[in-house]
Length: 213
Image (tube, rainbow, N blue to C red; front, side, top):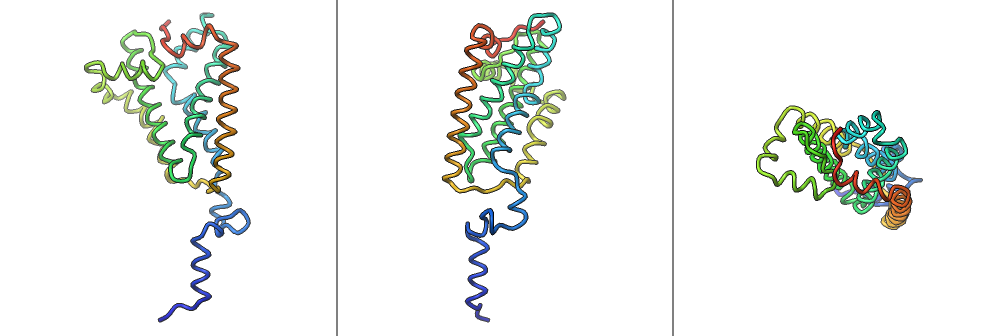
């Protein structure tokens, strides 16, 4: 049976970008979370839960007076800003979710590395280069199969990644994505510059190697 022109137009309307606009979108699209809020939530998750061994050490140092509350705030702001900047580079319709999954995975691996360093009584290598050098060392990669590391990977990466992949994120035009990502990167640059100026003698060493105790 030949499809009527009206039904064909309705079908075309449903699969076009116009059907997903703010004013003509279905309910699922209108209630989906805006990409900016997704970026912000993921960045906060990465800066906190994704670095929980780091915060465990920093809080111990704060109790002994080795780390001030202002320094903790600066580290948190730096971690969140870096994560937000990385997410802004991948916040496009075709790459956004997988960019988030990759960031969550790398952050969780870093948390495992710091957890293993804590178990060995070593200083925490927090920088990406330090974490990479840790995994390259013989035997360290195989230790990811321990129960604490598996639980860290599950909580910090696997569960939030499943929520992201199954969740609804609002689709916005390419032009709007470009403006949003540019503004986010500018804000990240300004924040990191400000934090770096205030803690120029503290945060670089903390984010490179953090002694235990």
